[in-house]
Image (cartoon, rainbow, N blue to C red; front, side, top):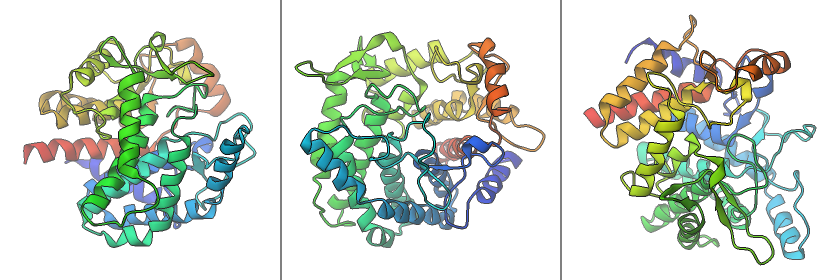
Length: 380
């Protein structure tokens, strides 16, 4: 598997706090937090590598953190039932300190982002499948139910997308995470590994999937954004936004659509055409200006993960080799590389604001591990 694989495991272990939280990037002060989304993918990577104690420590940290702030869920319910607006600190946050505390001083950075909550439920279910430890479900029963109640309330509300942008819209990627959260728990209930809770997870999974199929498709593929229901207007797809590489998640791993569904194949084809640089990496979306809009290593691995899952091993290996070629002298994988940026005039202003691109990014290392193991699983 090579040194980058073992180095990636080491970097993740070193970046895991005693509390169980994974720091997003140890060398980038702006990312000295744990995002539930990043952390869930990192935990899944550790599960694919058989490092179950690391992932379990993370899931327990999530459980404690959600319980700590769980009273917010009824507060959100009260606001919605009374027709009052839900404020940015009324909701469960998208990221926390490594000690599991909220950060409320960041006026410029939105907290209402749902993707991490569906993703942690999906990752927890995958952990049980891979490790066989269903006892963890009993231990985390309360935070699981809090999360289900929260997602039931908020999945149709406009919120920040997975890139911390566009809070005025709904996002098929984020909706896919909610589907996966509900669907994963419904599956555990069906197999008897969990008891039935107060939230009808299976029914909700169906509702989210129906919503995606009805409102998130345009010209035979999945769109990046959905205009939410307003007054008497129904939701509608926003096709002007183009495609977003995070939409790979609609099939892998969230399984809203089968990997070979024509809608998914057309979405992947749009990502390949517009966002995958030939012989290079994958961009987030065409209008990206963050650090100049470089090629993201984790998205390159994500496309490779899709290729491995669909039997396109040669393409998956090619992307794996490109990622390996981007590691620096310390074996670190950055968030993005800046050799072929979409908006080069925006690179220097971001460097002046926050310093060099985040490196190592634990999520990049995690997706590389997932890709390596997905290729190996297909070949074995």
